[in-house]
Image (cartoon, rainbow, N blue to C red; front, side, top):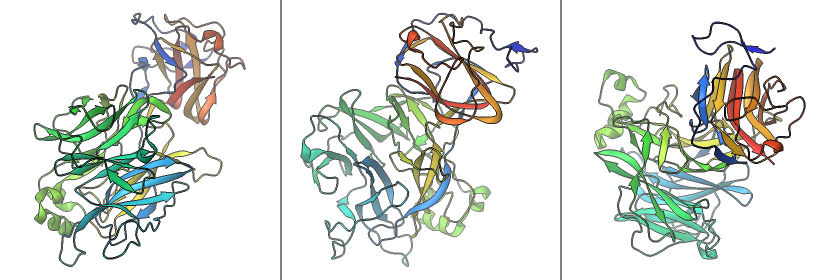
Length: 496
């Protein structure tokens, strides 16, 4: 008999692990998940939680990996875009300088710059010789003279012409212009007229080929009721677009404003859209505002426009299964952190668009996800810091030492083995049971059959009395019942 501590105040006695949960109401039908990886970023598959909560995780700061230190870059470099491409990582970003004081370098036109990396940790700026800046082509600039922003992507549309393998949306005064390139370095406009005209656009507007739906998507910025929001538009050819419509964000928060969105399908679970918007918060002058770092510089910015000195930004996380209706976590995903010179400003926590999988600094440990976040915005020494997060580790289904329980809704799967991405303490563990839709344990897959699971793994194969083969259950409606004790569960997958 295995045991765990009860999961609610209603239970005051020890409970057998093999005791099923009370039968749930029958759902309309099982959810077909096939062999896709499922993350706990929402409650889509969750029927019940007892003493388990979905807990937002937070990236951790690592080293400074990039410096915007060239004359054609500047103190307001922004809108970084990273693409894994042909064995390396490619990055585009906007070089920008805003002269706040006559002693600072003068404002210059926006330049789109390029960098690359073999490991996602160390970046180089190749001398491209493409664009003349201040009488010289010795720079890493690929486009110049744009109005505000420019965000490329590699077009995986099978009908894409070679000369248009890379595409981008860039802001003009009248809307978003479409661009194309064969190599991501030499760019031409797809006509002089904007392809998307309805919107504000002074943000990182992202487009991509949606292989799941066989059409292009664009996530752009606009306003509603005076509030900055995010909208989505669609196109079959990248030239003709639908009118952008606002995303639905839940839970609803009054007067929540967003700048960038960084939305894309998650490469390990392409049925999920993940977004990392920058949350924009305007505050008035107050004792707390004046207590933040660099008051003199804050007042200098405020002389240009008050909100530039008093607005503050951080990062949030959201997810969706259709790309239009998003679950947004109100808690900050990326916090500004300790007060230090150059921090707690409008411009903090702007992430690069694009996740990068990088080696861990711990020898033998699995890869991590890297985020790239701007620091010291408005300063001449603007830098980019790398932050890391566990693979799939955006949200954890977490149970305390007393133990907890998670029950999924009925689903069908394909595959021969169940794998978990999880971590426990030395004293913690998990047990997994496969049940029928009514919650009755299936023969050979009960909690008592399950071999104890502990450790920290991205892809642990689960066994019942030493056996892992689940193929006999493939295609049948089942539930997962998972008992956790001092443990976090991030994702699961049935694989072939």
